[in-house]
Length: 339
Image 1 (tube, rainbow, N blue to C red):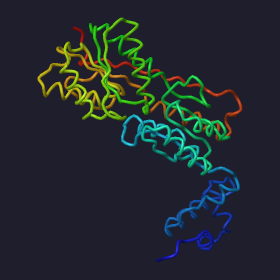
Image 2: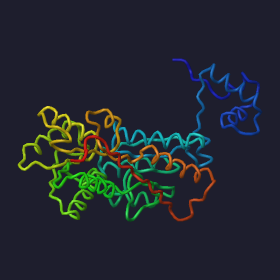
Image 3: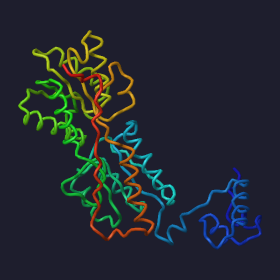
Image 4: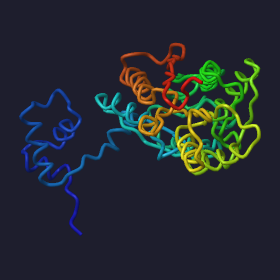
């Protein structure tokens, strides 16, 4: 096995000191443009990768932000990570990702493990945590951001929205479209705290409008297309059938829609259907799905901008925690056309 090239090898080939090589990789102003370009070219030719560990220990800056998300294959969370990464890229900050699988117990373990790696900040999805998880965040000594939620008692900064209010807005839309009885498809426990908030918003608004409603829960979160189809089959077998069905996500709504099509049930003529999340598929289904756009990319971008300014000294983190409110957009489409 060939030995990895060292900084001294680069310095010797470039005719400079190892310190100059180190400074070149950190874009230090004391290194001229031509010298830096020469050093970087030699490093590339030799296959050298700069090891920032020692430098980070001296500066007490790791260069990364820890982030926990509940799902790796959810397009919304992927967009949030993309927005976060792009907002921090020019500040030299990178993301270290942790996957909770919709479990606040998993989140607690991840928070501890991530904090051991000395991130410069930590971003978590949602505002509900175990008692110990919340304590770890409160005592982390670094900026903390809770996203995709508006917790009543935030740990630090917040970038998000009320899932309950957003779902309540959807119920109001369906009521205005002529629905007087509703069903909600979601998970069967509170592991998905945002899903639980959407369910709560559905129930609260249905009661306020004096609408008949029922809850159909199949499986643990996240609710898949298959589970959406199974739940819709249960709903269609009921008597009387509800006027409209709301789903915790667009994926569940797509499964519900295909079940209607298999059974020859017309959407929206026989039953109205709506989702949540503004996934790409909501625009290409037939009929297209009414949904809620939570602006996932904006959540990440605003989180990244908030952290970048503080971590690179442009804003102090000693002031009161910042609350950045995202305004979800109701996207009305053919699946809830008025009767």
